Amino acid sequence: MAYDRNNIFAKIIAGQIPCVKVFEDEKTLAFMDVMPEAEGHVLVVPKEDAQDILDLSAEGLTAMMATVQRVARAVDAALTPDGILLKQYNRAPAGQSIFHVHFHIVPRWEGVPLAPHGKAMVEPATLEPIAAKIRSKL
Image (cartoon, rainbow, N blue to C red):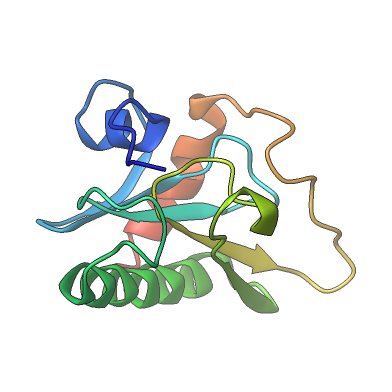
């Protein structure tokens, strides 16, 4: 399947759809997931057009992983979870639902179940204070 520049993440990167931004640099963007599985769920995307990790250049992967680590450290410092779950899906049979490569950074607290993936939308106004806490630790 060819890369679809009309996917929601491509539109977020292009500034056509708003997001609650956590971090941005020349090659990557990190923003709050509007359908979080846990409080503080952040998505990291490369700005390169790549459907999945198999399509991403080595340079894009290096930049994305550096941002994943930087943001995961900030999530950990800001929210003090018991653990950090990193998830990345490739192709629909593996669970990918948006076809722009991305990592999920999901804070985990012992005994607190995850919300279902991609089921319940949260208002940006609810996400902004959490994003501000994370940004303060970058």
